[in-house]
Length: 249
Image 1 (cartoon, rainbow, N blue to C red):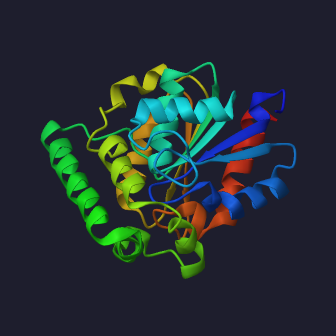
Image 2: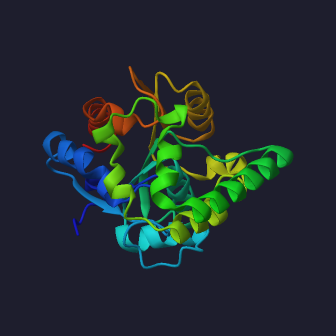
């Protein structure tokens, strides 16, 4: 493990993905930031993770930090919410944050309850139809319209199990998460917030994250939607590299 934690990036994937979804990004990071090591981690319920799929966000954050150690944490969507929990629960390990298409949760209790119900319905759907058919439905979501077939990494997502994905939704979905907006000021490390130009919901959430954090920069990647780092990997890596050089070089 590199001795300088700011020269280490730990990568946390989104729902239905695995650590392998970062392969292209990690390769670009190695070119743009050769002095920085990267480690991609499988989160509970996904890939080859041996931690119980029933792990909640706090337990998922503990798993992430246990593997990553002191580092800068990069999280996409669900992985961004796990990284936020890591920064709050294990601040000694998190030396910086990069949050891509992320949120600190749903404020309104009624909206949160509705989302929890929707997540439960989706979890039951996965168990009913299986991962293969579910991925057809999931990747048809307009949120992922910017993904090419190659960038979607569907074959890799098929390594996940129905039980793992359903349990992940039930235990780490946004509906189960206590909102963290009023705790963002506790995070005093440099943070980079990335959103896609064509993802207005998460652009707005990104601006709110940036305003709430003590030391945050927001970057909007042109011609990208929610899956910024998969749709425009080179542009996303350029943003990360420029931020890293400005803050840690």
